[in-house]
Amino acid sequence: MKSIRIGTRNSALALWQAREVARHLQNNNYLTEIVPIVSSGDKNLTQPLYSLGITGVFTRDLDVALLNDEIDIAVHSLKDVPTQLPENIELVSYLERDYPQDVLIRKEESRNKEFHELKLATSSLRRRAFWLKYYPDATFSDIRGNIQTRLQKLEEGDFDATILSLAGIKRMKMSIDYEMLPLMISAPSQGVITVAGHSDKKEINEIVKQMTNHKRTQICVEMERNFLNTLEGGCTAPIGAFVEIIENQVRFKAALCSLDGKNCISLDENFEYNEAENFGEKFAKVILENGGKELMAEIKGKL
Image (cartoon, rainbow, N blue to C red; front, top):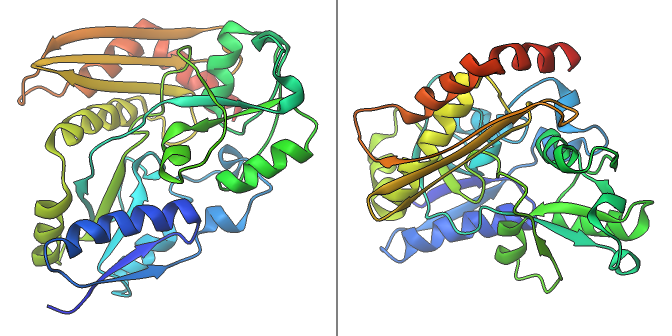
């Protein structure tokens, strides 16, 4: 077999993720070639993602490369991948989840400010809404870009702090102070690297799955993505979902919030895993039947 061509966005974090997939394959004697591709989401750093009006803004260009046979597989942060995939593209593996949490990063001069006093920089509707649930008078600025760009904007901008994914900080081995945020529920599938492939390339897809897939992570994130898909959240609504398996018990924690954080419908369930049941869909329907349907309509109307 020729080298497996691994498509990736060209940010430092995305390249790290692609090299991690390559490492798994190389450890099993497969040749690899990393092919960086600039995504639409990386080209436009001025508008918040929700205002672009599309999902898959970070995956679309890699999808095109897959379909045009310019690459064999594409590596993504799973939370960037829409729940509805293009025809002939499938997710073939999920690497073991490492750090799903959101963390707060402050400017030095804002070290002593209380949470309710902070002016935050984030373009994430989820992070804004969950923060507003607890601190309704908070003010926000939009911020986009990779981790390094956001940290630079934090230092230069007129705000006190930003919220980032802990996974990116850890993967980049960045030596910066951060605070854990238990008030946040992670975005569905946050902290997970996934590999997408062309449906016709069954041999390559099977090799990648065998070498890189972590079954327990797959079970958890498929629940989270089924939950998101049933709510029809795409990448825009303030939806959090986090599933973990401890021994044979599953904990499913999730919430849907209004844009202003005043109305949040949440659940926190513990149960035994059963492969035959679609728990993500089941719990999304619980949310929808308890005011979530009206809340989703309200959010879509405002966006």
